[in-house]
Image 1: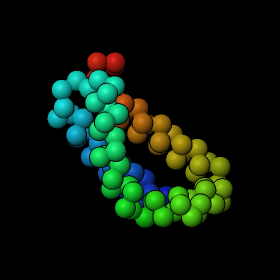
Image 2: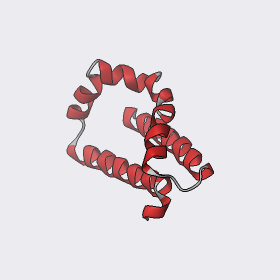
Image 3: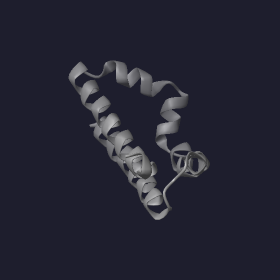
Image 4: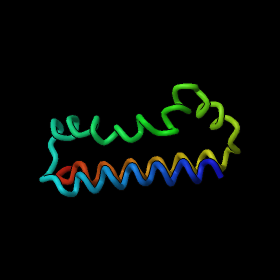
Length: 92
Protein backbone atom coordinates (compact mmCIF):
# COMPACT_ATOMS: atom_id res chain seq x y z
CA UNK A 1 0.00 0.00 0.00
CA UNK A 2 2.84 2.42 0.74
CA UNK A 3 4.07 2.21 -2.84
CA UNK A 4 0.61 2.98 -4.17
CA UNK A 5 0.70 6.19 -2.10
CA UNK A 6 4.24 6.89 -3.30
CA UNK A 7 3.21 6.36 -6.92
CA UNK A 8 0.16 8.60 -6.50
CA UNK A 9 2.37 11.34 -5.07
CA UNK A 10 4.97 10.82 -7.79
CA UNK A 11 2.22 10.95 -10.42
CA UNK A 12 0.90 14.25 -9.05
CA UNK A 13 4.39 15.81 -9.13
CA UNK A 14 4.92 14.62 -12.69
CA UNK A 15 1.49 15.86 -13.81
CA UNK A 16 2.29 19.28 -12.35
CA UNK A 17 5.59 19.31 -14.25
CA UNK A 18 3.95 18.23 -17.49
CA UNK A 19 1.30 20.92 -17.06
CA UNK A 20 3.98 23.57 -16.64
CA UNK A 21 5.88 22.39 -19.69
CA UNK A 22 2.68 22.37 -21.78
CA UNK A 23 2.20 26.07 -21.02
CA UNK A 24 5.72 26.93 -22.19
CA UNK A 25 6.85 27.37 -25.77
CA UNK A 26 9.00 24.50 -27.04
CA UNK A 27 11.59 24.00 -24.33
CA UNK A 28 15.31 24.27 -24.98
CA UNK A 29 17.86 22.63 -22.71
CA UNK A 30 18.55 25.90 -20.86
CA UNK A 31 14.85 26.42 -20.14
CA UNK A 32 14.45 22.83 -19.03
CA UNK A 33 17.42 23.07 -16.67
CA UNK A 34 16.26 26.39 -15.21
CA UNK A 35 12.70 25.08 -14.71
CA UNK A 36 13.71 21.95 -12.79
CA UNK A 37 14.53 23.52 -9.39
CA UNK A 38 11.12 25.19 -9.21
CA UNK A 39 9.34 21.97 -10.13
CA UNK A 40 11.07 20.02 -7.41
CA UNK A 41 10.34 22.40 -4.54
CA UNK A 42 7.27 20.40 -3.50
CA UNK A 43 9.32 17.22 -3.34
CA UNK A 44 11.87 18.91 -1.12
CA UNK A 45 9.17 19.64 1.47
CA UNK A 46 7.46 16.26 1.20
CA UNK A 47 7.50 13.00 3.11
CA UNK A 48 9.56 11.58 0.26
CA UNK A 49 12.54 13.77 1.06
CA UNK A 50 12.50 12.61 4.68
CA UNK A 51 12.55 8.99 3.50
CA UNK A 52 15.44 9.72 1.14
CA UNK A 53 17.48 11.64 3.72
CA UNK A 54 17.09 8.91 6.32
CA UNK A 55 17.82 6.17 3.75
CA UNK A 56 14.49 4.60 4.67
CA UNK A 57 13.27 4.52 1.09
CA UNK A 58 16.26 2.40 0.11
CA UNK A 59 15.46 0.01 2.97
CA UNK A 60 11.79 -0.20 1.96
CA UNK A 61 12.70 -0.90 -1.65
CA UNK A 62 14.93 -3.78 -0.60
CA UNK A 63 11.96 -5.31 1.24
CA UNK A 64 9.71 -5.24 -1.82
CA UNK A 65 8.99 -8.47 -3.66
CA UNK A 66 10.89 -8.54 -6.93
CA UNK A 67 7.75 -8.37 -9.09
CA UNK A 68 6.54 -5.26 -7.20
CA UNK A 69 9.96 -3.65 -7.62
CA UNK A 70 9.82 -4.29 -11.36
CA UNK A 71 6.32 -2.77 -11.51
CA UNK A 72 7.57 0.35 -9.77
CA UNK A 73 10.61 0.61 -12.06
CA UNK A 74 8.30 0.33 -15.07
CA UNK A 75 6.14 3.07 -13.53
CA UNK A 76 9.23 5.29 -13.12
CA UNK A 77 10.21 4.70 -16.74
CA UNK A 78 6.72 5.56 -18.01
CA UNK A 79 6.64 8.72 -15.92
CA UNK A 80 10.11 9.84 -17.07
CA UNK A 81 9.22 9.17 -20.71
CA UNK A 82 6.02 11.18 -20.36
CA UNK A 83 7.83 14.02 -18.63
CA UNK A 84 10.54 14.29 -21.28
CA UNK A 85 7.98 13.91 -24.07
CA UNK A 86 6.35 17.13 -22.90
CA UNK A 87 9.51 18.90 -21.79
CA UNK A 88 11.36 18.19 -25.05
CA UNK A 89 8.52 18.42 -27.55
CA UNK A 90 10.79 19.22 -30.51
CA UNK A 91 12.88 16.14 -29.70
CA UNK A 92 9.99 13.67 -30.06
